[in-house]
Image 1 (tube, rainbow, N blue to C red):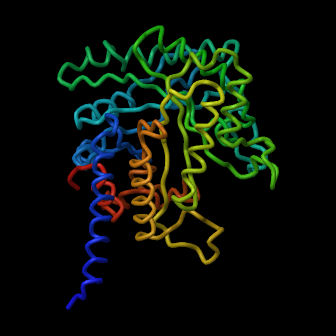
Image 2 (image 1 turned 90 degrees about the vertical axis):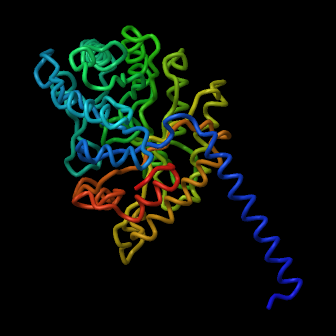
Image 3 (image 1 turned 45 degrees about the vertical axis):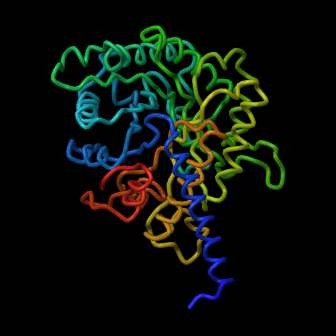
Length: 381
């Protein structure tokens, strides 16, 4: 039997819970269109894509690797694999966000990644000379094929027309594994080249900066805010890009962040530091896209520092729940336009946490995290 004070305490707690749920529901109902996204590591089948869409997935972010698309010097662009992906996404009702990245060796030489144990990446970005011309041609051809009034849609009249209108330039250009010597001013030039090429074909298209890895190790002198090469903090890289590339703010429509953290509670500091750079550069109206984020369902190691992203199945769900709740309720304050969970599926041996970041395990078997994602996205599993 409840005493009066216990009843009042229970009623007060219930009222607070109702207010919190109501506030979250109001925030969720006001989210931008196509807010819920995912990053697949393998190409989904049509059946898998349809399941993702039923679960509430609005958008898939996919890599378009220049080297794979155009392996011979200034040769024909090989659209075949992309055509299949675009068709499956269109038939399932999912929008695609492509990020164009990489460079064939005929355009940009490979360089050793500093301290990368022999790994290689493009020595620099295709931001000048013949490489920039070839890069711009690639983007124009992609937009001509998959953008508004693109040839792909004319050639496939039975496919629901879902033209690609948003394009992302490169991936983590502040991280040495994607360009051996990250250079903010060079990236700014690439953005300007890309914007001009894309807009030349589709004046209504949107151009988003490549997702910047929020805080790569070794990017700052310990105990200070001083930059230490070759990697860059996302905020430092963005600030240096503005400074080193006059007029660049007119050449992109949104910024993108990859806030990989050990705990979702660390997200506000990283996001607010990033957005502060926009404010200081009088560009705060631009939206933020979180184009990768996630935690792994792998068993946590005995030494937690060995893999801070491995949380176990229940821990992965807890991080997803906490992060999504935080991002939804902070959406207006941070001008957040989209969030993409990395990843749809596990990919063994790809990276130190890619084995377990999927919402689905091997065989497209749903994890508990998939059901948690669906609850936020408002779909059915």
